[in-house]
Length: 195
Image (tube, rainbow, N blue to C red; front, side, top):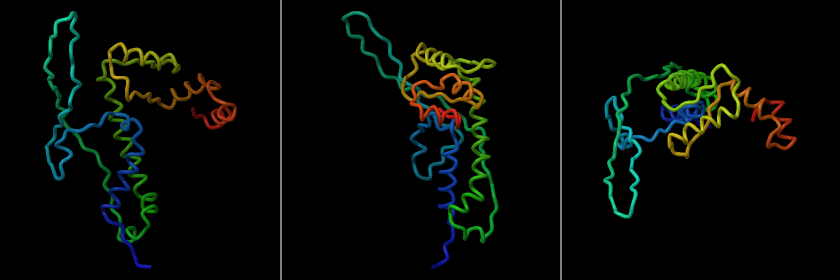
């Protein structure tokens, strides 16, 4: 059997797959990109245009009042970049991709994902419509209050999700245990602490 060496492309693809799997919060963030990012080799600088939803007004009465569609966008400046730089030997390049990923890529992508998630989670302070249950046990009512705030603000209903920290996850499981599940799932929930 011939010797095989890992290539930078294979390593990068595997690292990105691992990173993508570990980004729980960021994975729920809308990542639609500016068309300029889709072009191969495009270098657009340190800013990104984010398209805002179109806004219209409702008329009253039988008279037509056509509105122009105005595409609006805001600019996001890319102010920081994160990365994990590692050295490895030519001997390590002879490992199988799975072994290489387990020994080198997994720990590197774990620490990178944790840093990216921490940065993203600090941005909650910039969110105007939020329900904060800090200091109290998380309950299903708090989740529904979050839904109410979004609905009252006319936020789109698609793509909504709830991200719970570890303590809120414990509180939510404790509150919902035994509901909507057959006995086998309830036993698994109590044994493993999952919903």
